[in-house]
Length: 234
Ligand code: MN3
Figure 1 (tube, rainbow, N blue to C red):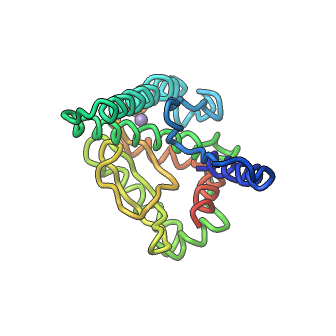
Figure 2: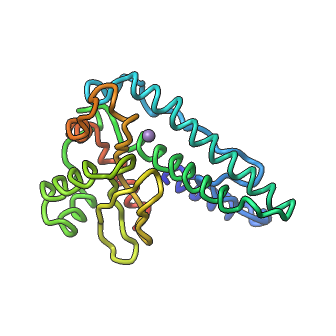
């Protein structure tokens, strides 16, 4: 989201300077036609989140799992473009679902990496500023929020995500779950923080103990990035 924002700001400035340019491209998760989605680089080393999240998990998770979603999304978009050009929509349901699944994976993982930072060096602690204020208004206290979020993430059925959304209409934060990467979507609510609770996110270090993984993850939450995600929406 922040990439999009800074791109937009730059584009707008450039647009004002060069009124002759006919159209201002807006950067986002969706690249312009013909361009491919790309795997973003991790903002830190694989081992940077140790001991809370181990290097081997980070490497596999980013280099293999996230890459598979990027490739899956590119493939789905390619097939949808082919359907448009050929007029053959026989497989439209399949490719639309694939685009949603892989697109959800690409978007959520891109957010996931950015909203973590090494413990004590950008990660952990409690939020301040606007996030603190909205958590208080939406849940009462930080402790209450954390308890509900942990319980929600812990109880995601099968593979999925625990998510903190900003609800655009209600102007408050809400805690949600996603099954896989896309099911149980709450309309009008945009994620600003999320924890991946697919087994691939924790099984090497925590085996079946999802609770210990979630408790460890709180030590690497990058609240500054959460605030930037939030301020972008306000
Ligand atoms: Mn994952």
